[in-house]
Image (cartoon, rainbow, N blue to C red):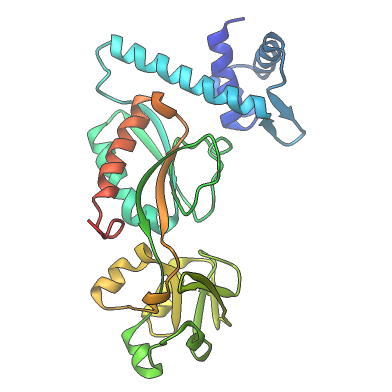
Length: 302
């Protein structure tokens, strides 16, 4: 068994989510891919994959082996590039993920600069407001907002955001500025499921959590539509500070109830490569960390 080829085949199966897709990606027959994986499992003496009629997923042991294989293959690629004198030029495919509006406002400029610097790299961006499984969706680097669960992913803090409550100046002029969270019962509420599907907004008073039930007149699945409704003067909305930074700066929205905001949420760049990340991953992370940490909207204490 060619162990290096077996590793490449296994990584392709996990990233592609199946044997057929991996066979197309590797330009191999389905039977050869299946045989290589069987021989690899026999050689290791463990089951790496759980097979069903619809999907192929790595076992717990298979996940750890997958991560090690990607690291080893990445180091081999870097070693070959270095030996060829091309170690200063990342190349290949890079996949990144971030929440929709954060991706639009903060990650896209980083991607554009990265692509201009490294013309031999192509980038796939998955901007979506849900937690993405890095292995299932083949992601290299991501941005997460909020507390991180325990995992094998590496995290680099780059800033924080607040959960803010706001409305247009015209709306507040007509209906008054809420002085306490309880006053929201007298206001028109715009609810976005981008933060929570629960009919309550969480505040903090004197260091203690303060949940307030709300009765939204408008509920929407996208943050940008909720923000647009608030800018139009329809009601009060609860979003993350970066999502309305421009609107607040321009005076189209006004923050309220700032003294009872909950604890800010951390922003982290996460990846799965550890200290031995491939050159293309390290180069993107270095650029993203420098750019995001220098943003006043994400690091207002600077």
